Image 1 (cartoon, rainbow, N blue to C red):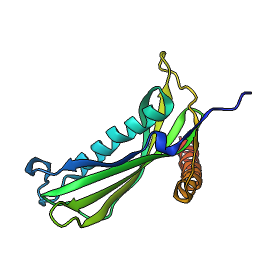
Image 2 (image 1 turned 30 degrees about the horizontal axis):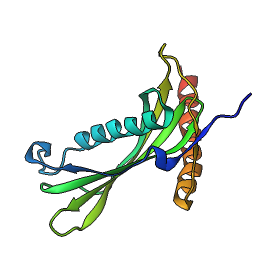
Image 3 (image 1 turned 180 degrees about the vertical axis):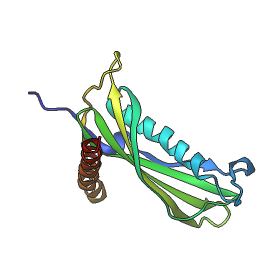
Image 4 (image 1 turned 90 degrees about the horizontal axis):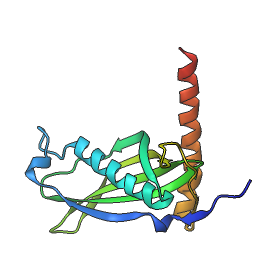
Length: 164
């Protein structure tokens, strides 16, 4: 069996994509609507998955969404996403969102999440994607942690299927 090609994390990563918060982005609590942030993360994670795989991709799972702090009116959101690891046709993309005060430059970490995407061929069947090549210590840590999260997702799926 031939080995899969590899691609570095940097080839598909998005670093500090800017989104300016406006009044229509607010919820009843006058903080930024979390669903809007999650949708933006999903769209950007799709870009990372498609850049890495070279194929149309679909969201297979979203897990470990952690809202760490609220974003407020007049904040600028900074979205950073990178491929953590790939397995066959699936890929885990990590997302980090910061809220920045554009006037002071002060920023705070507001959200972390993990998205799993599957690459599809022209017949909508899963297709193998390149392996990811972590280069930095942080990328290597995320690569290793992705396998732990995957094992947890697969174990949860196995346990839930046994209950039916």
